[in-house]
Image 1 (cartoon, rainbow, N blue to C red):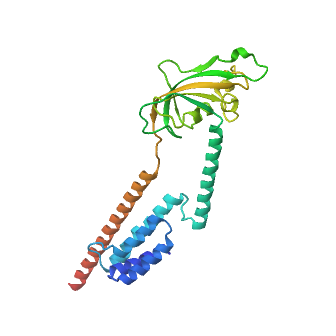
Image 2: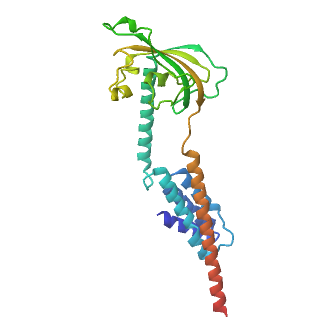
Image 3: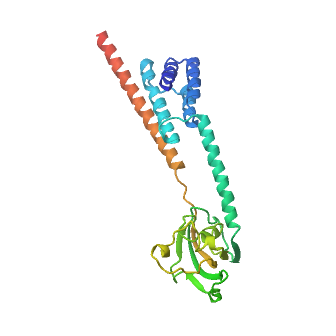
Length: 282
């Protein structure tokens, strides 16, 4: 259907018939569901490639339209076909609902932390967020032990940065204690906090497989211990954005190349047609 509509649009353009071109482009609008594809249908109403006449335009103009539709469909859908709008809407709604549920769960976990600011940085253009690369200096202490455990553990330092070697990680990468991961969100360079973490967000976290568990080493803290960390942010980079701009530039470059190929093809057809007519005239 897209190819047929493209040919009709090219026919309207080639014979300078605005009515046919607009009608065909309107049909093309209905068949292409993505914004980029619909922009292509509008261009069919106004495009006048220099030097193209008759059949050359009818052959050449559908190529960028058809290939552009396919390219944008592949980029947008990821599986080689243009998705049904109803399916897209349902999927989008499900993703939004999942994001909202995750945000609620994150906020519930964050509320279990006891965070106290010990110092604040002077300048904060970009606070730490999921995906940020952060460097911290930290110390970890036993804050509280469960009943029946030796009280001498309380106040003991069990973790800390090596002098001159800050701990580097990506926020929400699950490479550190979950309580630490959540505590550093919103911090800036120079911020220093004290955070008390419950056992299930520290060394009793069921979602984390600790290195000392894998190697059969002794636990750094007794089971059921509440821990307290002092954290200072020494370096921070904002989250990396992926995809959008690069995909847009690639799609634009691809469309430009296809239009150029179509124009060269049309010029070649025009040249052959003129040569053929001259030979017949001779």
